[in-house]
Each structure stands twice: as C-alpha cells, then as structure tokens.
Amino acid sequence: MKLHEKIESLRNEQNISRQILYYRLKEIFGEKAITYRTLERIEKGDTDGTSSSLHQIAMGLGVTLKQLWEGTEEENPLIDCVRRYNRKKSRYTYNKDAYAEFFTGAHAKFLAGELVLRPKAKTIIEQDPESEEKFQKLVYVVRGTVICKVNDKDILLRKGDSLFFYSHLPHLFLNPSSIESRCVVVQCPRHI
Image (cartoon, rainbow, N blue to C red; front, side, top):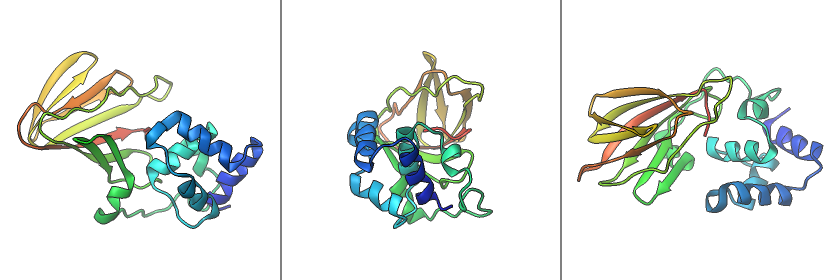
C-alpha cells in the first residue's frame, strides 16, 4: 500500500470526508494548517508531502507519524535525501523573525533542523507530550548566542555550545543579541 492510499484508508475507516479532515486541521493548526489543495494532492499521490504536512495529517487522523507510515511501501527507505533547496517546504515559522527548516525527511525517527533567530527574536513556548517515550532535544549553536529557557531556567549558549534536555519540559529559544543566531536542533523521537 502506498502512503496516499493509507491516508485515504484511515480517513475512510473513520467515515470522514476529506473536507471534514481539512476542517480538523484548521481547528488544530489554525493559519498554519496545510491548504485543502495540498491535502488533496497528497491523498491523490500527486506529491509525497513534506514532513510537517504529513505530521498535520497524522494529527488530524488521530495517529502518530509512525502509525501513518506503518505497512506502506515507503515505511523504511534505506536512504532519504533532503536537498537544501527543498528545506523551505518543511519550514516551521514561529513568527516573522524565528523559523526552523528541517534537515530530516519524513521517514527519520528523529527530527533535525536549523533554527534561525533574527536579532531579539524568540520562539513560542513548546512542550512535547509527557509519555512512556521520553522526548529529548539537543541544541547546538552554530552562529551567535541563544538563550534556551527550559522549565523557567535561562541557559545562555554561544557558538559551539550545546544543550540537552527532556522536551516535555516547557521551553523556548531567544536571541538576545543584535546579530542573527542559528542553531541545530535535534529531537528524538520525532514529534512536531
């Protein structure tokens, strides 16, 4: 079974139309929800969809990404290359001054990307679910300085510094400087 067939199958099992699934995505993700046309193209197999699009669809169907991929032909590719020019397709925008572009494709069991913080920018507070699977994040500063606020504790990181923490703790990132900061963020297991 192909991934787009699995998505349609899961939707049909729940006895919901594509339109209803789209309304669910709008309720969950608001303005950041994928468009109806994108949902339609993914479900028809016209496009593979980005990791963030597939994450939204999984959330709308009430399954994990792992469950979405299970039993599909695409489940375990040995090689998954994400080209630099395609990273913008899997961009997550916090606001006009803070965004993340993901390095990993939809098949990886972890999530890795570059977080870009323009001067004085900050992200929203994030908190991964607390479950049997312990979600972990690693932050490595490539340029500038970043303050990681984890569980109300401020940790200043400079170029070359790294930080590991369990991401079920509330956290956000901010750039205290007047120059752009960039860091690599790795999350395991994958959760957006």
